[in-house]
Length: 206
Image (cartoon, rainbow, N blue to C red):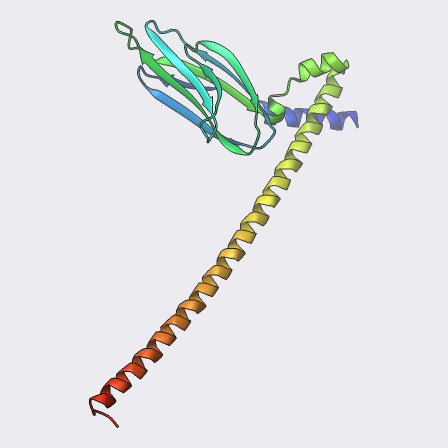
């Protein structure tokens, strides 16, 4: 049983090892990263920018409603954290501004964002609850299992919403088609009756 637990821990570690994202930011350039995150999820980020004399980089984290969740005017190195209030698209933007006489070299940006169980500090949890290393990894595995179940539940609810939307759209299209056919039949009948009266008035037909 212990061997099985160790195997699960190693398997879990493969999924939790995520490298930081690195890219270059040119002077007077803006680069943004977007990600969809579920509701009530802890999000943490750690960033570091290389030195560039005469350049200042503004970092801002916003949601789809342009609410500022984190902002740093002269970002060089730091961390940020927030908890999502609803399922939304979140955006992390780096904007470089070069002062007069500054050097036009690119800045190397390193960004490591984590959310959910990835952002949870199990080291602090282990200290607070005095857990053994194996117990910590089992707790991590338990949280991962819960996260997967929550994701499946969310996908299930989204599938139900999409199915209801498709059925509603299908019903509306069907009713609109029937209404259009009735209108066309009514218009055709009116045209036949009108032309018949017109031709009778002109004594073209009896």
